[in-house]
Length: 420
Image: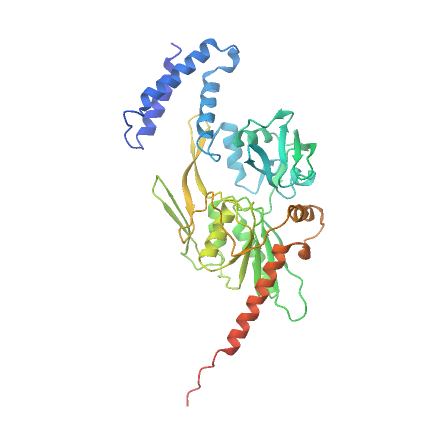
């Protein structure tokens, strides 16, 4: 009798799946393979030494975790609690530590800490390797499982044991999970200039969430009133977020109905186009700053505005996270998230695992990279340390040079003859 329930559930799942896919081949029959899985579950329930670990729910969830984790680093099984947390992440605040992590050489590695988060304030830095989570080794954890372990109730304590490759120092950080409020648009300002120089504006987008495009439009309106003639849009360390938000940001600088990104996969592809919701179109010169930690939505923006000759990209090749994850809810409140397509820029350049390459390559040394993060953490105002930021300095020089060239070219154009 133990075999009947899991076999029925899994056969029904297989029947639903095959309704939307091509007919199975003789060598890849869903029914035969489901029977193998069901038999394994039966044997485990029958003989595994710890009976409390072998409920049908535990075994089913474990099987789905392994199945999704084997597909690619971005696919995962979400239990009901994790699925609820994921839905909260698309809003402007969520609970956690505020660190963006990846797997690098088999090690759980911090890409960047989110500003004003517990991880940021504690002093975690890009490149830090997480060795232990609450005393448990992170070596064999999958990326989704590691993220799940770092999440928890707001106010709970968590310890991370970190190794910093630059110094080989190993240190334990004790953090408190918190509601992380993420203002997505920061540091909007007119950059310092000498008399006679063009006014260059600067604004940084930390991620793409629901209000990002409207917040950015408001910031740009303010800078335009101050006389801004060109703009630096900083997407460094921006991990992405909502695709629709990234498309809306592109719409601030492009005409309505402009295709900025498309997707292709086994399901029919889709195009994403700008709308007129951002108000008037901004036509001043634009440079976008990117680095190795600019991912997903920030790569969509950079790739589109580069391809359409609307912006110059300065910095480093981006992360290369250009895939679409579909989230399918399951009857018990859990969900599966898996890759269904890849992003393509307007010129049909694939983003995934390739990234967006800059027009002007400017790299930072590890010391400059850490100094940039520390400056954001330590400074009490929005003043930028431009001399110690080669990427920003190069962007400013390029924009001012572009404005001078444009003004001189216009002054040399022959004026139309007046009629008699």
